[in-house]
Image (cartoon, rainbow, N blue to C red):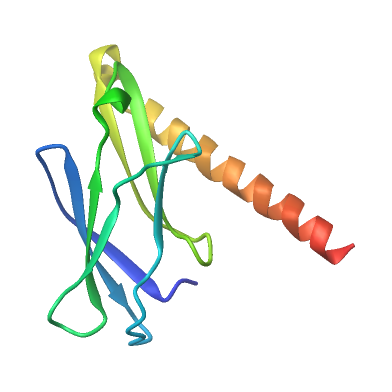
Length: 125
């Protein structure tokens, strides 16, 4: 279980925004990774807020990733690999098939689990 809790606040002008709370009260800046099709997104910002152990997270959505279909983004704790949240952009014909967003998310999470399992197997041998 992660000691980080991420809550979306809004998606505005191509930037996903959220609030990250560190449950343990640790004041070390969290390391957040956002991926799309297992590729890291650059420009992710994690900024300390006035309230201790609270952080603002901003994820700029690259224009080149906005296309027809379902585009799913995973937000993870880089230190533990735990998925904190996700969001999907849907456009074109995919709007009538929102189940596709869930399938893409499941595929991303399954790929992450497979990598973690393989790493675990290698480490325990």
